[in-house]
Length: 488
Figure (cartoon, rainbow, N blue to C red):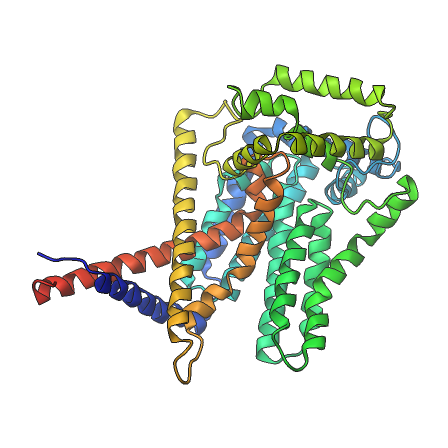
């Protein structure tokens, strides 16, 4: 009979951390080459999307967010204008409609434009995910698992055939992360040629923010982390700070034409869109708090109550002299309403934030009742397994940090390989954090996490590997205890 003592528990954790260090250290010298099965994976991923697009061809033109309508205005030579007002607008981010407009100008139909743009972005997501896995020095098997999860992810597959920005945003984000990591690697190897990668990463983040503005928040958080890390250097810190700031500078310069254009047309500083106020107020208003947060209505908000709130907002804004044709004033007015609701009901706001985070991590598609029950169950299992991997990745990162702290005071201390590997995951966690922070405040559902799915799959793969190593370590330790007899 074995009695588990505190020393045994610490011993098992120490053994697990040591084994994890040894296994992860092999990744540092591994060379990740695209195997033949990767090409097959790309072909299958694209084939699945083409098949789904063929079966649901009408979805390619289901323009719920008006991106095709905006693209039509651009293709007709009216500039980035509202499809109903025919006046300059900043209600939607411009990059995706402009990309569609280029193909529309060439004479392609709307459905073909969506299929081409989203299909190419899907291809980019799969390829750049594989490259990012190599930069993180993952093994061939782990890289293939993470890339396969990305290629067949239900959210990314579903939104490939819709005229929406989830897949293009994911492509720009992963490409920017690859450029950023390439700069980090070049800096560690030869300390030159870093500026070019930093500028490229910033340009990609800038273009990505013109697809979905949250990428600008991700870029800012990544750069802030790098700036904080460079402050510890006693020499050459000024140059390091400048180099670390290059991505953010390049991102701002990339979106500067959009900022200038908005300043000319609207006379205001608009780096993103004029849609934020409505989106914030949609999930932070007395009616939503009453019906969903403190009431019995489920999420998302029921149609009748939502329609009633929208109509009243139009009437109230008009009564306060806010013109429906002035979208910047409308945006500011909605921000005022949302902030007033938050200040008036702070507890309901906190509950709403928790609800939005729960919806961000939802494992089932709650807004697509047409799916069969079996498909919904399979999707739930898919995302539940990914969440388990994420939790395991967090636990293994803590174990690696604990392992590091035990050796920091030892003579001749050198950073352990396992911790070094997990430190390379910091950027992925920061991007995920930026999405969670923003979408805990604004209106949110599960599709909002689609752009970070590639990063989530990579982190989950690390977690699964760590979990399997822990189980091997635990079984080995138990076998040793059994062989050694009774412990006290």
